[in-house]
Figure 1: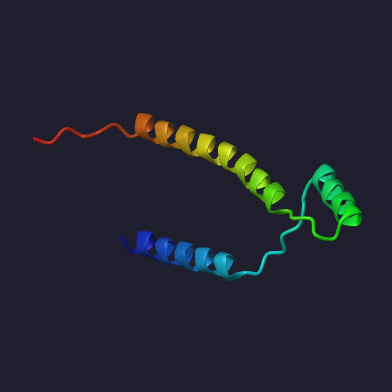
Figure 2 (figure 1 turned 180 degrees about the vertical axis):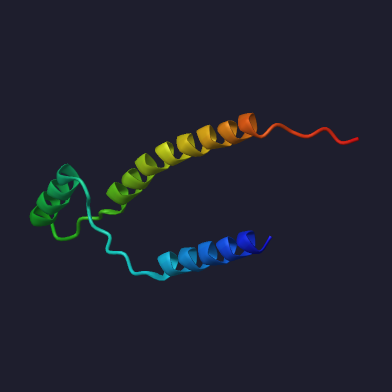
Length: 84
C-alpha cells in the first residue's frame, strides 16, 4: 500500500512539473516550417492558425489509436471478476 502511494505521489509531482514547464512551440517538420516562412515573406498578415489546427488534428489520430489499443489490451489481460 505504501509503495503505491509513493509511486502515485511521484507520478503526480512529475506530471505537475511537466505541465508547468515552458515548452517552445515551433514547426517540427521541415516542410511545415518552409511553408510558413515562405507565406510570411509573401504577405505580412498571414494567419497560421489553420496550419496549427491541421497539425493538431494529425497528432490526435495516433494518440486515439494508441489509447484504443491500450484499452483493449488492458481489458483482454485483466478479465472481470464475477461477483458472488
